[in-house]
Length: 166
Image (cartoon, rainbow, N blue to C red; front, side, top):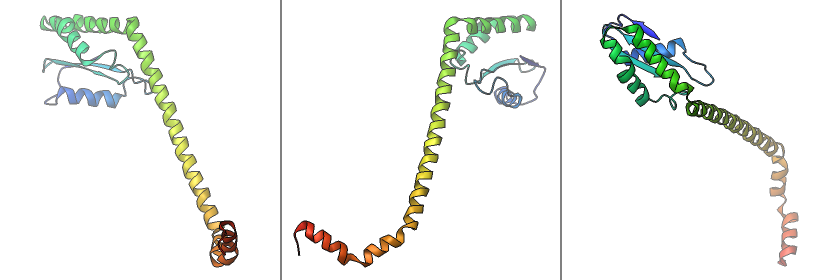
């Protein structure tokens, strides 16, 4: 929760996003960060969520929390009550068993994606290694291939005997 008297003429959305990124809010692995920014002189507030919380706390839910739980207290000038009621409402959403299940599913999905990315990279390394081995053998045995092309009579005779052409 960040409450500022002023951010000058800066846009609150851009400022909030920059602050969220600069502070590195949330765990880097699961990205469950949440920033609640209030700017007093602009009389505006925003939430910034990490990707891990977007499914549980989408923008529509957060705007409802601002409109129904925070704004009435803010209009009355009671910032403490506004912040507490907003955070309490968010806590209620996060403690909902369905929300907890969604967070777990998102974490499992992220782990599966990381696992698949690891094997994709491993497969790419394997392909590069196989290509290098192929190129090595191609150059290593290219002299034998040249010899086969320079002595076709021996091999053509074998081919002719198989086909019956003399």
